[in-house]
Amino acid sequence: MKIRSLFATALSCLVFCSAEAAAEPFPAKPIKLVLGFGPGGGADGIARLYASELQNLLDTPVIVENKAGAYEQIAGRAVQTANADGYTLWLATTGGVIQAPLLRDMPYEPTKDFTHVGVIAEADAVIAVKNDLPVKSMDELIAYARAHPGKLNYASAGTGAPSHLLVEYIQSVTGIETTHVPYKSAADAATAVISGAVDFAVVVPATSAPLINAGRARGIAVTAKQRLPDLPNVPTLEEGSIAELKGMSVYAFYAILGPKGMPRDVTAKLNEAFNRVSLSKEIQERAVPMNFRPATSSPEEFTARIASDTAVWREVIKRIK
Image (cartoon, rainbow, N blue to C red; front, side, top):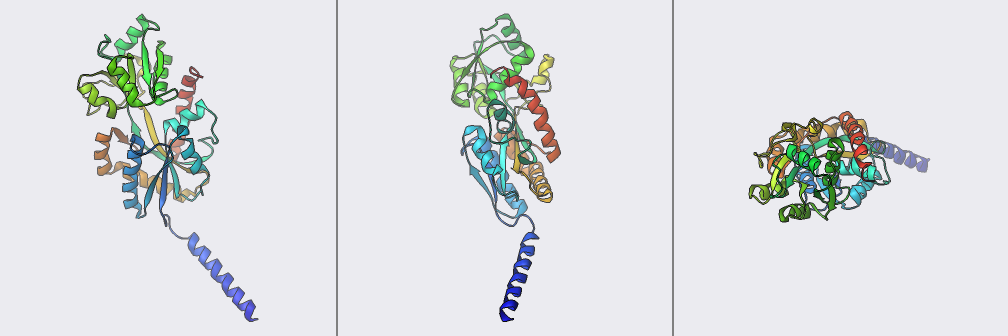
């Protein structure tokens, strides 16, 4: 009887403790934010900025974990196989969620194998040309390319990189043909424009703005809804006359995904928290010199965006496969 009583007491304690743990409000331990890039880059800067604000909002540590390589696949796989409790999240980009899965086989399908939390930021790019190219706008670049088919070449940060795919998109909707010259990094691509080794390139503002403002290259357009503060004299694609390029106002997005099957209340709490961070004055102010735009969305809007963006990029990627 004594043994039976002790067993019953232990079982009761186990059930009570398990129920108490299950009822513990989220978050009750540190959250890990995984990204597919190394320290020091643009994505890393955004991750650490959001992590700092998020841990103040949720009153729990938020740890950034860099798992660079394989077109964000290493980071995505680490999150895909984690417990679906909301404590392991993937800060992914357009490249990792949409472009890479279209370019190569991945061990997951972003639409089906993850919980979508939301888009948190968007980034822009600059189309820059070498100084002795006789064009001063996107309209003039397209006109020049049409008048000189096959003559122009452009640099990218590598085959399949957003800087490559964006030019392929431009070519697909305008009918121009230029030659792709892949480099190892965005910095190398910018250097190629400055030196005159290539005619033009798509480069990020952080890299290109100082060079353009110093007169070492010419900015002819930005992929943004409004002109960038660092490049007030460079027009947006919306300001040009090429109808096919209007509406193409975002170069890349940054979004949060979790393992498939996360509880709805946890997903909703995380979505609300990230949206609040994006809307905060601190983030709005710090985003300007970091050349990104804080964004908000619902999980459903993010899912819809993956579908619509995938349809666009699938047609572009057919050109290079």
